[in-house]
Amino acid sequence: MPDGERERVFLPFYRAGNADRGNPEGLGLANSPEIVEAHDGHL
Image 1 (tube, rainbow, N blue to C red):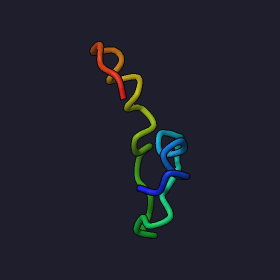
Image 2: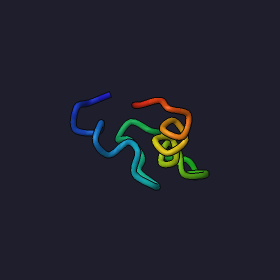
Image 3: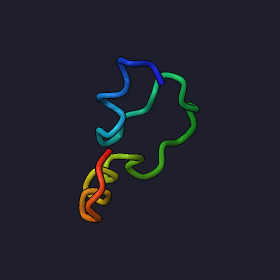
Image 4: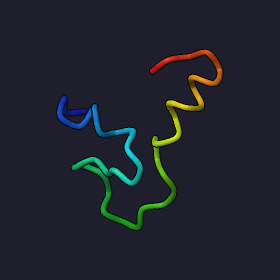
């Protein structure tokens, strides 16, 4: 993953520059930080 995209990958509806341009579904990784932190983890 390019360094410039690492900060944005958890934003809602963000799609990486090399992502397939099909129909986006769901929120991707946007909810991941909250889920991981709720289980005492970190990203």
